[in-house]
Amino acid sequence: MTPPPQTLNPIFWEYANRQIPVRILNHYRGMPVINDGWIERVEEQGILVNTHKNQIACLYLSHNTVIELEALPLTVSARVLGIQLASRKVLLGDFQQIPRPFIHRAQIRVEPEVTVQVFLRAKSGYQEVSAAMKDISTQGLGIYLERSLYHPRLYPLGGEIQVRFNLPVQNKPVSPAGPPSGPSLMEDRFSRESIRGLPQSGQPLKMTGPLPPASVSGSLNLRGIIRNIRPELGANRYRLGVLISALDESGRLTLYQYMAQRQAELIRELNTLYEGIARLGS
Image (cartoon, rainbow, N blue to C red; front, side, top):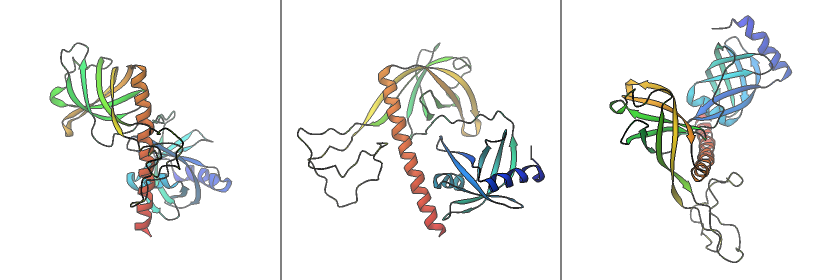
């Protein structure tokens, strides 16, 4: 449903004059990106909004977004009509009202950097089949299954499956005996407290500091329930949405570690993307 301008414009004017923030919602490689935005100007074709640089990067890629006006029971989708990269402003228009309650995937879900092979076996099946991971969260995962391997009797909605796969995770750096002479130039790339980028090329690595993390393969073996099935016939496959129903403590710790690691990577990707497009647009 397209709200008439005479309905939305007074609301937008109110938000602009009182500097009430709106919430802007996008996704980047499965990860929700949600930031506040401030309406700076209401124009005939839309609204000019100032927001966070990561949101600008998402808007540059997707050309659309969802806006929540929390002070009112109103959620609208919008199309990007123009972007001012350096000043982090975006012109949004072509609004479509979204009926409440609007449910978005605020839970962190990430797509793997490289293809993760998944082996699954139906409860009534006798052998594993190979599939690919679409995305993953701490509560579930999306799986791409080739059309030739899908059978509704083996993989019904609500059916239980066994899933195993490996996730690339980082070992924590190991410090040698004795006090280090200073911090390592190679920081833990995925630490939430110390994501400051990689060392400059040509800089020596002090071997008296902590050793850099090494990538290892974390094995997970879990049971899941099929919550949704979506045919993607153009790609000759089915997408299965699987809720994790049983996972041991070791596997859950590996999953949490991978999620934090991948989320940090995606945030850094967004920062790099914004800096790149801002330079191109200047």
